Length: 477
Image 1 (cartoon, rainbow, N blue to C red):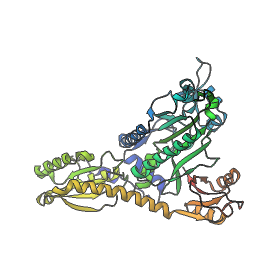
Image 2: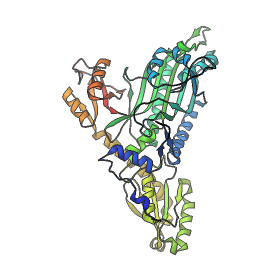
Image 3: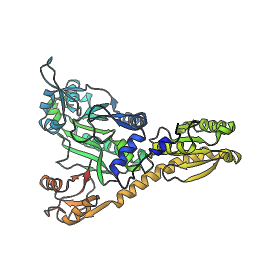
Image 4: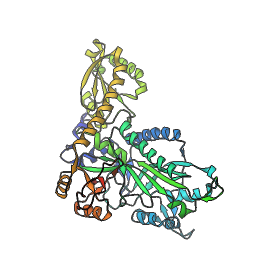
């Protein structure tokens, strides 16, 4: 057997030279996901599913504090439900997968999102102001019948997500909590995934079908494309009207409630790969990593003392999430490559000389720096180093975002910045017509409009009409 076979078939392209191929190789060779025999679908493997479980655990803790309860609703949605909210049905029409249902006399949709099926239930459950606010979340799969080429985690027909659905007495409460959930998503991305995001409001053209308005967090990827990483929609009273959701208020009169919905998906795993990965493979921020440390004993075949000490270290560091790789059939170099490919944040090496000096060597995955650490100081050093790695990954990504954001003043600067694969910030007229022109000519969408706006005195950088806002634009996934 060739012990170093896997090293030979590591990442064969550079991130800077062929980003698309690099991304696919990292996802597959780091054993995050694979293509399914079902067209447009993917298989999420344990290395990636553990990341999704950590995202679930993180959000579930946050949501419980906000009095949001988890529930589960059916996968199938009657066609008549879609017809109740016309704008919503129109927006999702191209993406809905249908199955025939001769028993009930109407087609059933496989959920592309769950507003309609959930709000049918809400119309029966909500009777009085005492039933409000109603705040539920579900973790589930959804199907969007994409016709474009599959990109693992980024564009597949089926994917996993969470979707929250809340109902309120007042628009003020709905507005406040719509932004509150978006803020939780920002914290998830920046503090947990170490990915900086752009927070703002979607244009009318890009908002969720049937919503009053949509807010979002947007990432900017190393290939010069924006990635929508989370959304929170104020649905107004549109769905309440369509589904007959009413309540008796304190004034003993009938009222329509206000609603929002919000969600993030397994697309976040794709963002992790793109933002933090390098030419060796995946780089996982410590806070999201299930395995934060791998211990690789060196020369232990000749010394039982080395593996014994490695086991002691593993036990001492158990709370961090640690693996001891004491496989005899692979060389240390092979193991180093494998764990670097899989993105484990910290490697601990221990060999005969280290044992003599009562130390180990720790190696950071984010920058490859090595450090000798005494046994007596190891736990403290490991904790501090993991914190440093988390911080460094975020700061590095933040610096990339800053360096690749260009403020433009006119059409020429706008088009040149897009050609250079930059994220554009521009004064904009906020019109659907102008946005359509930008999309048709440059293949670019508006990402979002920052909440905090300066006083605008000037013209739209693209069409020259009176500007109303600053908006962000980029090619996007």
